[in-house]
Length: 268
Image (cartoon, rainbow, N blue to C red):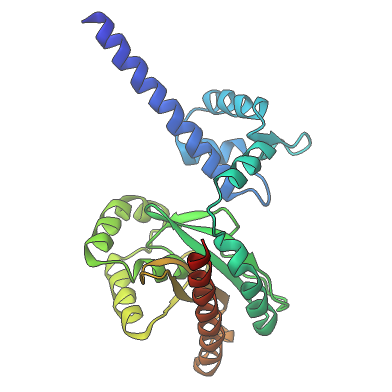
């Protein structure tokens, strides 16, 4: 019985370490453009500073993480990039979409983002910057948020089946309220209803006052939402007439991307 208890304890401890490693890597990924501070990672993951430091130094020694000597901030290491390449699917969604994001950014002058689903979250996997001087950095590449937060993520969420939507909203409720005090499930459900009618999501950015985003989902050949393209800018640049122009740009890009995905699937 004692051996079974020790084995169970070791198993739980091992699982906890894996969970902490994964959470730290996600935290670094979300801040990889500027680097992650130890204090921020500790607060986000909910672990003590010495424990986080010990795990991070182990990841540094394995090449999964690197630490800048001057700032002491953490970044993803080369080993993560190498594993990412090995894990890439046959059809790389970012590669397919990248030129379209750039075209939209050049035509509109605004910030454009590509979001894909990862479990209960939406993850930004690419972005393009327009020439408009006020840059709206709503998302960094690698940043993840609950699938019910942000126009790109909600454009994906809106076209899932009702049971899946209810499950995601239930699972994400606590952390959404904790991080976004203004979060309202009722408002999310209204956004979903409008999106299903109009085919796009238009919403004010929950954590950036004065910023508005518009997004359209990207469907696979089975009409399942797999990603979304969103555009964000200051509210003054998204009046009704300009919104129509932006929708045309997004719609044209999405149609071409979906056609290309079908061709790539047929060739595979």
